[in-house]
Length: 269
Image (cartoon, rainbow, N blue to C red):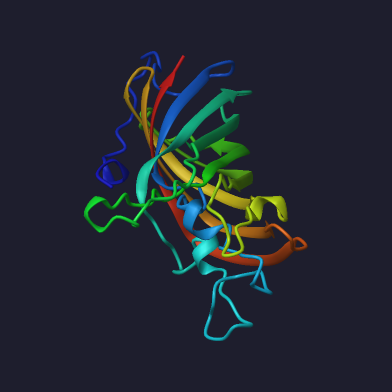
């Protein structure tokens, strides 16, 4: 906020402006701030635990067996849930001295290899061999891409550049789990013979936002910025495909104001 209240000193006559953006320049920034991702703990949220003895699939229990809540999946438990971390990279190109086109993206990929169940042996009390629990093979992909444009405004201080614009974001989060050998049933059968051991879940999101912010030139070519969404509309589709069940689909919409504050450190060249 110090930069926002800095005196707007007039530029001396005849001095070359080394700080303002110019047509044809590029700017690459690291974005730090509110996470652009859905809940990153997809292994716990996106695909529910299903067995062949359960007769339902869907959202987690929201009070009764027939109800559920989207909050856990879509990070919508609060009006604004702002956890600060590194969330992506933004690239800009200035198509004029006042207008730019930009794109930003972030990717998070997690992979866990499987481990099969190993039966132990407790027939000899003094030499018990414990069971080895199995671990599902899990792969999650979580990524987003944003396209936008901003209009810059010139002040007397050539180091300070406020701007406003629009941004469109698409995000996809997907989790695939595959069961290895999980042991035999009471009848001595392998459950994998009768059912697939694969569960799939995904979230698709589209978002449109009005963006505002400002940039301060620490030195020629080195830029520190602050940005937030003045208003946004978001539409989410959540889908689950557990083994033996049809695809379960749920929808969510939200309208927010003054959200997703981020800091940016960029290089302009």
